Length: 294
Ligand code: SPV
Ligand code: MG
Image 1 (cartoon, protein in one colour):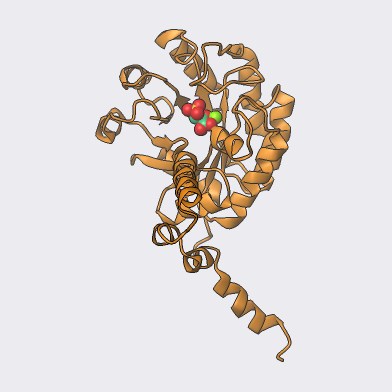
Image 2 (image 1 turned 180 degrees about the horizontal axis):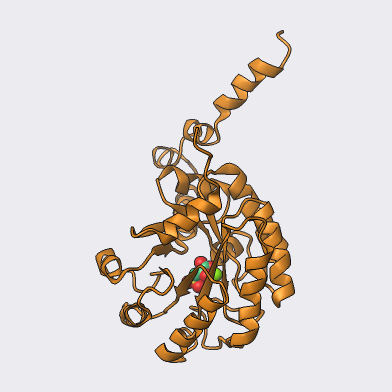
């Protein structure tokens, strides 16, 4: 029989293949399970969504070990690869080493590191996004590369030059340096509502390494534009978290007002669906194997 592919190998080939891959955000094991059963190539362990679910702001308020714990629960519950949003690495190269070592031991398939300073602020909040020095950030990337337990662990370098207002040339210069430092792919981020600067980057970059994008603000651009431009992977960055917040808000409004769940019962997951999702049937069969017959 063929050897099983590791999650890192699966993520690596999804990013390197000619086909456009889609990674969907999850922020806990439940959302990760739902992403898996809907056929996505992988899971984006979003820093924004994980922080939000923990009641913290996307400004490195969650500690790196809290993030690792959430990722571990997601990885244990699913079999598709997880690309972890490692923010700016929680410090310098040494913090990156600790983080990557733990993430790869706990089942993550890759990490994305952004070239900002610690503590970072979410790219859509405010105008202060000081970038890391190129040389120092390359050290963080090399440290990530060297610290994973397996050689297929994916290291994505995220460029925040456009977010910070430094323009295309700075973004391209950084992409070249990060590729030379061993990044497997470049994530280019933009906060514009159209894809102009993303497509400008992708054209100039000419696929020297695979490109990953996060169309949170430029979501109206059809995926065909990115396919023909040669983009490797699209991350839907935060949509399960936002869907959950909207659904819970609506539910709470109605139940509070109606003093009844009768009208919402048909619109929420049944307990049967939840028990299926968590595979309670497996426990029953294991009991038949391991418990004494009574
Ligand atoms: C995240 O989902 O945490 C991201 C993407 O890093 S963004 O919020 O667009 O910066
Ligand atoms: Mg993030």
